[in-house]
Image (cartoon, rainbow, N blue to C red; front, top):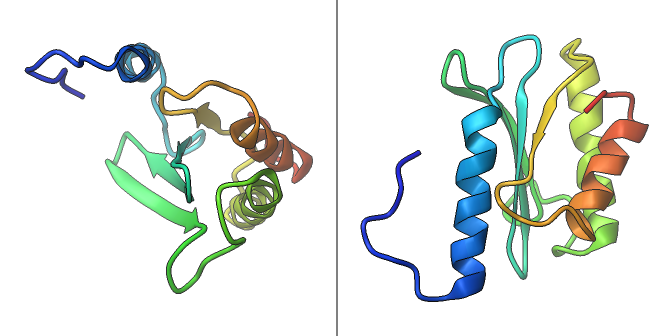
Length: 124
């Protein structure tokens, strides 16, 4: 991931980008241990399971579109998305994964998502 050319004037967005770059330096998904990348906006939640070694997305779950799970980016929908992610990962015989919070703080919706994935039997 490359840094933006221009400076970011919004201080909270600048902090978020700094956190995102610091996280992505260390977090790499493999076939045995894929990366769970969670993107949260004000209205939606989007989760991708990524194998960085092959540069492929294994599958994705979101709260919008045709195959939407839940309704918006709240904790109840995050729990539903997390149980769906855990279910698909256990079907694919993946027991461990790495959680990438994508620069967001680990509170609220992202914490509920990670906890529901853990309750589904996947070690994060």
